[in-house]
Image (cartoon, rainbow, N blue to C red; front, side, top):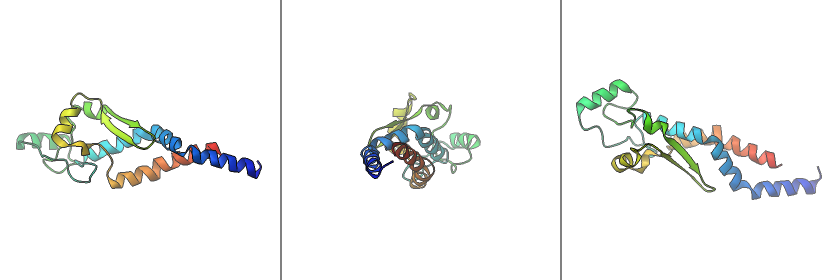
Length: 145
């Protein structure tokens, strides 16, 4: 390959960077959803704070604690039947991604617990970048070179 050809390919790779990022997120969106669900299983929002409000009754909190001991007592994990978690989807755009669930309870859960139930906390953002997104972007760019 000539230097001119390499420069042309490099320029093409740089020009297609936004699409390479989108494609990489498309490929790894399942990891985003998995990390988000893991946060919720621990009772945490994307902000790093615990999901609130807590359960209304001690009886229900005890029942939920027996189902999942990961979050502190009384902290919701938003999982009962599993439908909300199974409905997780990641939509990608050139400049961002959005996480949601196709479950019919999604809007009710957002109304009660807020939008911050969707998204990655700082630790999971770093983990996702290092282990998934960055390698996928590099693969896409190398494919152009």
